[in-house]
Length: 434
Image (cartoon, rainbow, N blue to C red):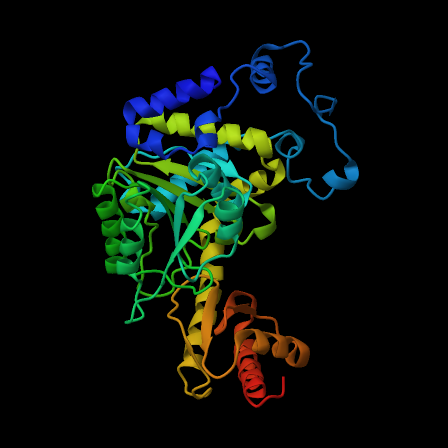
């Protein structure tokens, strides 16, 4: 094993032996090179005041070389904030500003020890980093039965972990904390579990209430007290889009420092929070550990980044940073929030109106981009196909009965027509027309 990797492992083991046991084989072996091209280039950037012949970019007239056909569309930005490589951890100021934003929006983090967020190539990359560092073949990854399909690729296919499912809702259509608890405690023989907490949930658009949130935290603490090492990952992709009486904070704050056998990891980003999906700017943050251990995990994270994408895109980081610092940012974001909330409320009003009879029910939703119908009289895939071929409507079929509808991309005045078409497609399939 490389001495740098061993040094990082020793640091974590010395301060948090339980966390050291959570690392995957790759997580133990990975490190960020201290001596190499990046470190030598960084040294030269500070001291080479005549010529710096280390950097792998081209320059002209003291600035990064660039094409005017590109720069003419980006004249608001200095070329150095666009064309140079971003540091593997991301733009330092962006990391600091995002941390400040996180603390403002999550008061429960006020007295918690957290790392400086590391910039990722959006949330999937952040989840992939967590998988690389902590998931080995055969490890249990606990997720609800209604989940984002990419978890299977990221944790199951790529890392060989076993997905353990529990029902998202209980008999009262509340979050099934008892199911989560049972799934966790069933891992005592393994001695380790990775828990993915995705709220607002994709595909259902559900966020637990404060009471349900406390039950989730209690289940994780009980598992830790039973000797299970828990890697608790909050996938906060749709954070902030809370439309009703639910948790308005990430559970990351309550999980930080919860127990010595609980490691809290927050994966979030500007992707959906700031409506910049194609920018691919996300973050991964570790919490609840001593400063040296947080620094060690950051170094391992940078090792994963260096070994995969080298660094994230610089222009999009610059764009996001400028937006976060703008005095108009909060006002404009609130405007978009109101639009999204209006769409969610309109959907709920339509579904509760009785207009669509008994063809479906819907799963509780209170946040995010989506909601899910539970079809009672027709198969979801048949309805999806009928909607496409006859009514020009795209939806997502999940299993035999569930149909995911993204109200986020439908104008509020068009929502009734959308659900009228879905209803007619259900009736068509039910009568054998499909």
